[in-house]
Length: 113
Image (cartoon, rainbow, N blue to C red; front, side, top):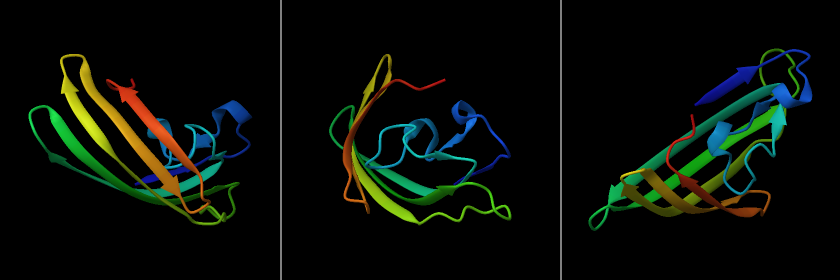
């Protein structure tokens, strides 16, 4: 779950929908606002050796604050992909799509700090 609220934030300090993992189908940081609410569920299953299958579902909204909860339209989306456990950290390659008919590949090497 992600919840964030701000007031009179500068544009570069607004809250990103999905944080640094982004939201399925969007570029990381594409949807930003001063009020964000998101729910995400990720499941993975070990396959052969260091490989794993990853599935993710998410729903959320982002807007300017109005009473402590975002007032934007609810978005839905999902990702499916493969993970690989390596000495430098997890490597993830996933394909995501959302309810705005946007799709995007997500690639992550290691962890973001």
